[in-house]
Length: 443
Image (tube, rainbow, N blue to C red; front, side, top):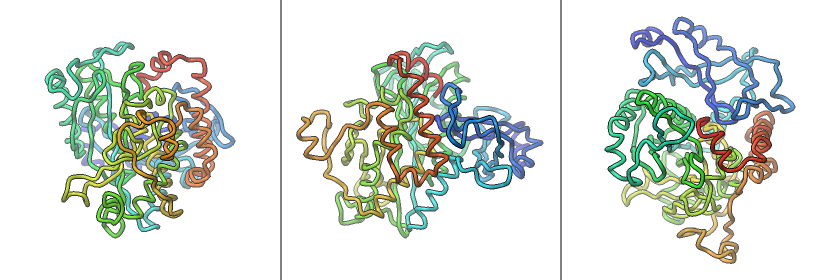
């Protein structure tokens, strides 16, 4: 592998993991040391698992102190030469103790464990993370949209034609299968979607795509934000997750006798995710800025309901075109964003879905139209509730959730709760404007 990287003029390799606050933390090694790093790992303190988004540490019973060291082991099957950062390659890592044991708070290995748990139950999951970002002119702290045309409009592509082309080219060179790229709704906002794959690789790609977009943007003199809220009271950036599951090679969301061709297993899986959404928001909407995005009538999915192609529902059933259901049918979880650690989110969605199937959870009635247009009595009769409107409420739901506690294990579960509460305390007296200003360029 080293010789192949040398032929690509690689000088250094980025060893990448994502912490509990959703920040991509790294070490790098020169190419001459990569073989040793692959064999023995590179050292890294475990303290980052209790860092807040401003790099301030909090503590749990097991994590957050100055003691200890970990080894970052690159996944050699995921090494990518970075198209927009000449001389660099990138690899996601699994983290081990110095004794060679899997590190209990490694988020990537948690996702892998949940994939194996699903496989033991006879299910194979596929996922894809949508990436939305806002593009700003220059490198100042304020946000100045780099394009001014209408949402989804050709004018925006004309304004940023060379930039968008270079994003596509970089992702292609890195081996990423882009399905579509387009201008989005909000100020200076774009979206890119890559093909679904296994959940761990999908999470890897979420990290890689964002790193690549950031690098291409810098080349063009732009600054980009993936933050849930970039401008107060404007539509924010989502990080919607598409997921499907198959049994014996057949998509359980198609070809069944249930609603819209779903199998009973698919309905139970969806019900499991719906049931846990208040707690899952502590994973998938992990920032105070997340709740500035998660508002009604903005296609953010702030109500705990599902609907076929309903973009206001927290869980949207995508059936695909007639004749393509077996390949296209999936569910989109819309109430999550890119402040989330994608490995934690992938693993927790699997855990919630599996609990739904094992417990025989019942999928409630579908909701059509915007739930915000229903009166309270109608929503109550349908069993539809507004999802948490603050991080504090979602963390309380998370802390009481035994299914997620069992899946994550004590170290990871406690780290999530501690970091979220640290963010709550940090922004307790902050206005929405202050929250957005503090986090706009962190994510």
